[in-house]
Length: 184
Image 1 (cartoon, rainbow, N blue to C red):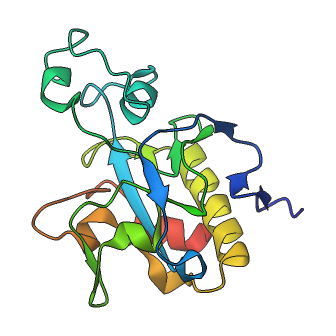
Image 2 (image 1 turned 180 degrees about the vertical axis):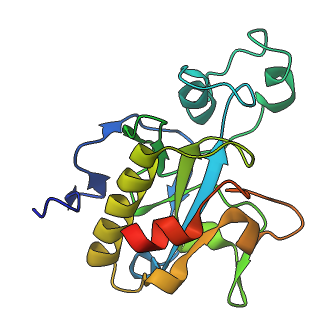
């Protein structure tokens, strides 16, 4: 295994903690993984280093823990990976399964991006800078995914805002695409 990539076995990323989200389903075509979608998330908004994102993806978010949670606790959402501020990675859905991250979306004329994409959440917001550790982990993950899934190219790594314009803004203005592409 190269130092600049992670291994992938049985749909799981080595060096990550796996917590199985119930919010997943079978991909319509397993051999059609061709897109990586970068998101951001913080729960509550702009608060980091807690267990609430995990709880959200596991359908265990306590609506009484914060007023914002009352609005979202009923949603069934997941991502394949979450990269925290310190660069640690949690995987919630194996790559060969469909995570529920993109919602109503279109990429190059094809709708329902969840069917053929891998969703990566960065712990962050549209306005606050991401950490060097996150960029490094993200670039390593993406290199590993490109190696494992040959339909993914560097041109097929986009933000949530690119596949759901007008509806989503993440990863936001704070995401440095040039820095990411240089590391990639």
